[in-house]
Length: 179
Image 1 (cartoon, rainbow, N blue to C red):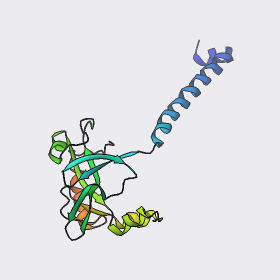
Image 2 (image 1 turned 90 degrees about the horizontal axis):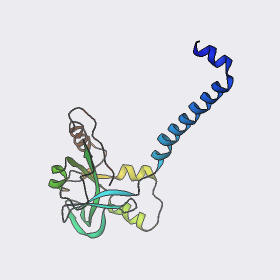
Image 3 (image 1 turned 135 degrees about the horizontal axis):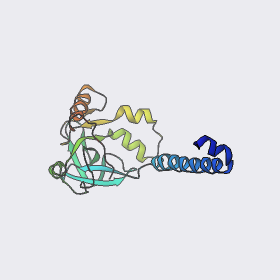
Image 4 (image 1 turned 135 degrees about the vertical axis):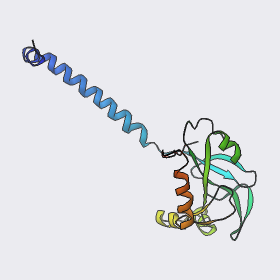
């Protein structure tokens, strides 16, 4: 007896199979879509004074003076804590708060670059002013992991840093682990 004949003779079996398939499909959709929509609550930051990776709330401005101040070449003095963009090719579980740049690399990861906003944008945000997301993105400043040369995040210098990071994982795309 073929499957088709069996299902023709027993329509309840066909209905039960259809319900099971729908329930499994619904669970798979919920699992894959439901969990991925959660926004991160923490981010990697780097303290330029102590040369240490930190974990802070995504609401923490960059630069932040919670760890002290830093003398930025050509930009003046501002908070020493800036956003860090970390990349890894493998398991990111070995990356922890308090690591130096060298310790991050020994753990199989790399601080690809640092990001901060200009002082006028940070002041506007601290004063509770609305700053359009497009303005935030266009005004963003970027540096290599040492924080010694800051330039617009949308520039040929930043493009060169990002292109170099693409070769980090031997042909695979590097991942950006969450804290």
